[in-house]
Image (cartoon, rainbow, N blue to C red; front, side, top):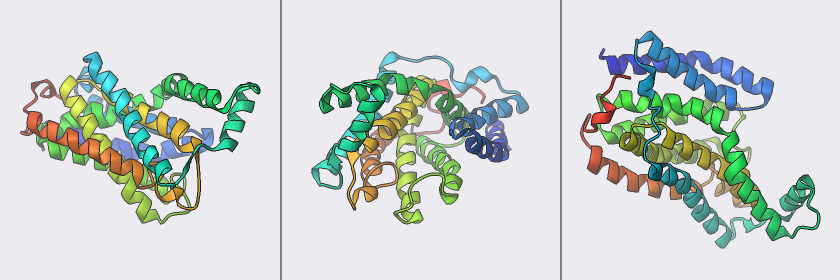
Length: 287
């Protein structure tokens, strides 16, 4: 087994071994961050066992434009997806009950609905975004920091992007099987399919950013942006009806399908620039 396959295997063994601890901590503290951090711990453990330099996880910042792109792309596909949902009446803009809860929580009783929604968006895009950093960084140290470069030693861009995305999706599947993730109103197989399409599509873009910048930070930014805008703004602000659950969030149709369009665009860019194994010299360092 080559060094790249060895560290991949060790990493995945660590991920599986630490998973029960992560789920136990999730239940204890009612937060997914400990489970996400176990992926980073698995990446560090794999590098130590295989005697690989931790710097190869991609700590350099890279060009700022890729950080901007990584922040804006999830916002854009979420916005487009929810415009479709609102426009086709699969849900409505906006949930007045949610806005009333925000108004009371912010103690801004005199503010209009529009002002409350604008404040919510600003806080989502800044404060809530920043608070996601520890958990997301933990995950991305593993999936994009270690796994993408390791797979790139033996596989071309297409297989790296798809396999890393599938493994990332599978990491979440047990939570869905156990009822901790997703919803109770649509079939589990439907949710698994839409969720996996969404994460694999995201993974294509993040793999491209990892190849392009030799940095894990654009993936961290992308992951944080996706989570915060969906979970803290677009999904809760939408007034639901009987069809909303089939189209909204990562477990409905709209977001995964729009994200897949971006995934296809970046797949074509990735194949054009990094189609062959190890065409990107920056990813040839061991890890």
